Length: 341
Image (cartoon, rainbow, N blue to C red):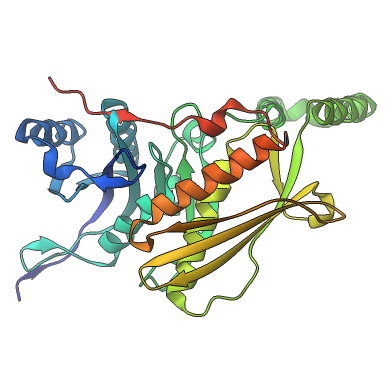
């Protein structure tokens, strides 16, 4: 068997789908013209990348560096419309075997788009560490997850679609404070000693103001029953990460890790069956545990993002219905279009 040693590269894997009339997402590579495919290849090459394959609604490419791959992904999102596009980025080896690129890193990258929102990017810690600090601050953390057939736990990050990457005022203030302290570190101690009382009063006022604006604390323990096997555990992790990333984009909602600090609790239950998966959710008001909303979402596990999107959309609609949140972001679907020249 002919084999060459793998070289280190930034790997990009893109899923392109189209929403049909019945809200199902289907691969659309079969309807892309040769001109469309050539334009995608030329676009990747303009970022010094190489397209390995375009097939069944998927594009596989690699780049010489993580930063240039991330920039190419951001630019690619801007060139797409009318299609749902999800991108996964990873840095690893791409060995050439039996006439095609193979290897664990290639397989790992192909699983990342399932954790991204439509119009968003999912990337690993290896890509994250090379990005500028300004870009890192725009990403959200999805936590650690063990991907299918991958033996190690990976820390994943997500770039939300355009219009969903808003950050809370509290986080913006913290970032500005950290920048100021780094710039004037010689005077930081003096500033701390002379303004401690003012900072305490200001913090109290800020927390009070945030509460008055309706900041809601939600406790999300995830799935409350143990997984029967590894595949079910991977399915649980995928659904929970997508839901957390969607809820994290809401300015008036905060996901807390402490149940006693929460006002509402969201419980998830998974009942997988051959060919389909059923996810039940229960929304409670704390501390009494009064049931506000419950529902069941059924989806095809082979198109996991369909199940994830429908579940997150239904939960956000329930939060809005009970006036727990008021953001207009909940019902806005992100659509992307491929420019044809």
